[in-house]
Image 1 (cartoon, rainbow, N blue to C red):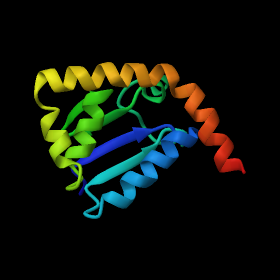
Image 2: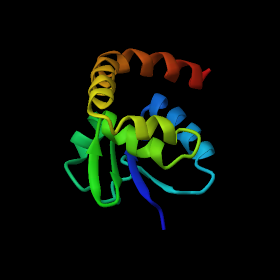
Image 3: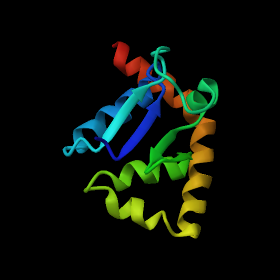
Length: 119
């Protein structure tokens, strides 16, 4: 049984690379990775919302944005300290601001990463 479930956009080259890295780091197989582009997979909330913003479930609690990343990090021993630090409200707020900035540049990064994958 997994401790954390993450949902990701399997059509996003950037997301695919990031989830591939997380899968390598998740040596204990504590994370269940769910590709949202597989439409037979049920979603806990609206699929489009989940495609637009990263989501993770930890101990039955659904997180989104920076909180979802922190939940995923807590499941990976190497990243656990960062995930635990994000339990402090000021750190999580800072990470959420950075995540919102990332969402603004994500389309540009997807094109860059996507171009590298196709080459």
